[in-house]
Image (tube, rainbow, N blue to C red; front, side):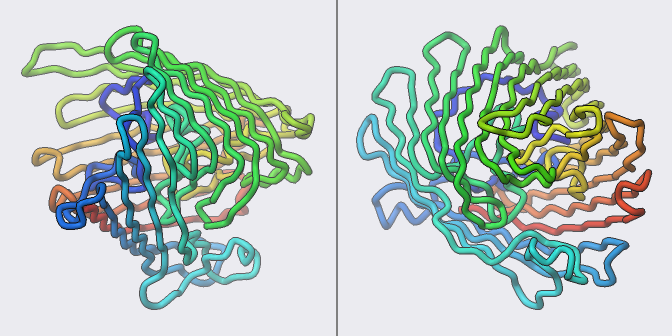
Length: 428
């Protein structure tokens, strides 16, 4: 299920004063890893200057698509090395390098440009060496953090802006992000970014402005008003338009009600969200679509169940609401059949079940999706996603995931997709 659809209540307004890292801790993953704060490593004891940290994340990939003669098989790996240091009471710096590569035989295609010519399904984890993050945090203004530089960015529940961390190379942005928590139980964010490095390792110019105003009216409940303004002619959405620049404005409420007593307590979770997408900075006038999502769930000490319905609307079959900067693996299934929303829009109804055992060292998860169009009543198909994760050590986890997509009407030409991943995640 999506990152915001966890079985425990999630508040919207949370102060984020610690630096975020590419590294996902060796902890239960809710269908896709999420970025968390960095972890000081053992090297700082003898290097003595700041906190050093790192990650090694090898992954086995197996992908089969019925319209291609070959099966993608192979290992990829991510290696991250980072350092952070507080220079004064008000200034902190961080720098992080990343290298991604394949291990052993390369029986797959990792080049998007060869999608139409390769016999192998795409595995979008090309070899890449890069400066992953490099920023300065300034906190000299009361209740405020100003982060400037190359950084990971999240907007709310990651539905519209995220680092897409499941890929070996995450998405990062160059710019400035200001966070302020001066008002009680409230966090305001304002950001402006001029460059993006995508999960494919490619660099591109853009002008991205975003804001997020989040308020916790009560413990366990959040309300957020957000928006982003993307001035970029060509983004990751293949709409056929000359200019895909757009702005999106939305409202979201989420949280949970706890009932029962200390020995038999459960939480009733809810989420409601609406948004509207319009042309911006010369974007095509056909960009006009609405978004909404409703979700409810119940969770206990080790078991959680959710049901959600999400609609990415359509402008009468001319344009479907796009999310080019989203966390692709947290929404609409892990086989990634809807990275570009069809012009007829997308309706996704899914149910998710999560079970934890042995003090959360073993986490089992599954969800089932039914896809259809928002305009025209087409059946787009169905998908099963299942995963199991075992926390071997506090800083080492293994996760096995499988996704199976089966088509409905002719949007995909009858293509069937099966994907399996085995990931080891070691952080230090």
